[in-house]
Length: 605
Image 1 (cartoon, rainbow, N blue to C red):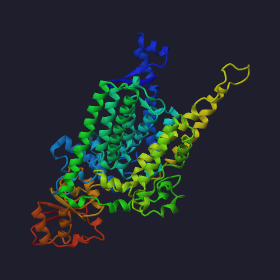
Image 2 (image 1 turned 90 degrees about the vertical axis):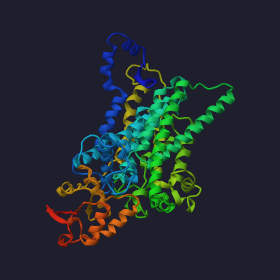
Image 3 (image 1 turned 135 degrees about the horizontal axis):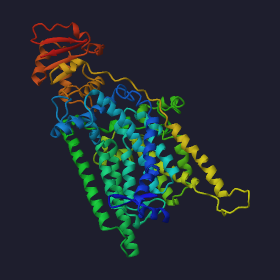
């Protein structure tokens, strides 16, 4: 039994006369309720969740106190999700103007915002909820990546076996382990899911081509909305999707016009599908434009935020990076240690999509359920994406190539890491692999089912042996996704943070420690001057220099001048900074008070 949709409402499509009669006779609905737990998409969803828990373990072992990756970007992103939920519930007008980087404006968009996760940010409050929420999202985004790739390859014509291999290979590709601390980079499941919905809505698959009778306007609209949601998670991954969909629309329109001209007859499309595309495309475009304008406002206020091509050149990987695994890979981490030493920045250059996936995709160019010219197109897509992923390494300057796009495509210059084209490279490889596995899963014997007594029919033999054969690629891609990602304990916010009046400054200031302070502020979201992003606002640099000698007359006067009412100093974190030994500095005659709360100092100005 398959699910189809008429408009936006899913309905049951029968796979046999018997099923049809079951659904039409009294009691049919009851029987459907009993069957849904065994339905393909129920099992796929539950399987994706279970797989995500297992392959991201031990993320959910201590979800309230540890975090996957490191104490850098994950703490920032846990704060981002919490702030989005808090702002939308309590003060939507202040969404872009967060409680960090005081007194700057538009501080929420100093990095990829993860705005699409705001509904999760509305659940629970405080520091512990922020950490738990991050860990749950970390698991769920892997589940969505699997489900998205599974849905896409199934829509394109792959079997369940092929979809499972593609889903695991894409969602748990070894290169993703280098980004265990980048929720915005890992959150790409919406890409595959949106493409699957759009393909389903337009009745198109690689295996069967365009089938007008299978058009589903509701699915097309849903695909555009999922794509818009994906963009809200950040332009780092969302912008290539924007340009891909724009290109796909132009190519599809061109093919439609060519077919009309060649056959002298307009191909069927349908008014409802056209309206769904117009409405969905408008929503997608509006979301993209709105977020783009906000980011441009940030660059307007902070010209130093504009990325130069030097960043792109620095992060451009060599060709060996595409077959090199990150250190967190359980299978390949140690084996590829020597190769990683050749990479100037391994976190962005260790890009192995999976040895098994490469092999399956290569074989899928020759053996597949897809048509030959589709296989060629997929292969060329992989090649083109790899050439773009080389960045400035291609030809010595990346022009023509990735840097050409940086110069001519609006916004592309902000995508400083060419290696993140791996989202598209590994997805195309997964589609090729699914075509191969599907071809292998098809019964090869054409002998009659009736055989001499005592003999096993070839078809029955295939049904017994083939699942065992197909378990091999499934097992291999799963093993390559096993991680050894560290899960450090997140420092707890001190009681002094709750005792201090806002706006406040937390010392020592600057560096990755500011990301921890941002997470600490999820207890009530007091305004703080601290914060860390891809650039430094002018006022923050001025503040850091002005308070190096705090507490003294000059630093106290400066802080009062910008509206800061409290300073929280954590001496245990101050070693090697200008604030080392701050607890011994006198406050007499400064007109301020100092209080020691469990080893953390609160200065009231």
